[in-house]
Length: 307
Image (cartoon, rainbow, N blue to C red; front, side, top):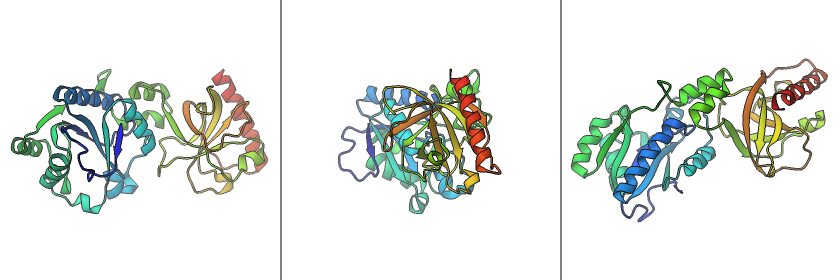
């Protein structure tokens, strides 16, 4: 899969494209169903399959305080979409100038002129352009004029209930990882590169792999039993904390993972942390000794769960 950060690349779509548009946060079963249709239509026309998305997501631009916690960082989304086998991911920077583009200009400039779009696969509630003035009727009218087809898609349901990123966030909020996994089509995880921190965990006797979450808010907070991949060729058990470390008056949201029975240096490695069970919420302890005692208990609880 090729990533395009702009639509100024000449001849990027030599035979045209079939396009779908969205946030694709989590790339869940509903998204996967859309992508399946996208690929089928692209293959039937002999053109490229293309997903168009934006960074930041539109709501993060207009009302960042109201934007939901992301299920996936952009890198995670990129890897998840790549695994679905699409040809190109177009990620455009969402900014004021783009938000002011009329619906007609949006279609003509992005879809027709830049991507030579032959067909668009889209939900019937899709809105776009200045003040969200564009809808599926605008697409159909312009499709008749510009020569592209509009294929509406129905929401994907599991057990009679629509699969959505919001529903997955609700499952994660109550630590229902089984439901979240069934909606995603895979276990819920977070990934990132292990970076140097302030060595607080090592000083306490519990060294941690520190990962920046690359998101403003997290769908998970607290302490969890986890499995970790990417350290070596094994799956390693661990205890993860997502939070700001209130006992140290921390501010930045971090994912910290203590690997059980593993002592090698893993700085710089890109690891994937799969969440299995909630242990407790993040707490501001009265003393360092109380914190260490609780971490000991967290490790024992995780061992019971993971074994």
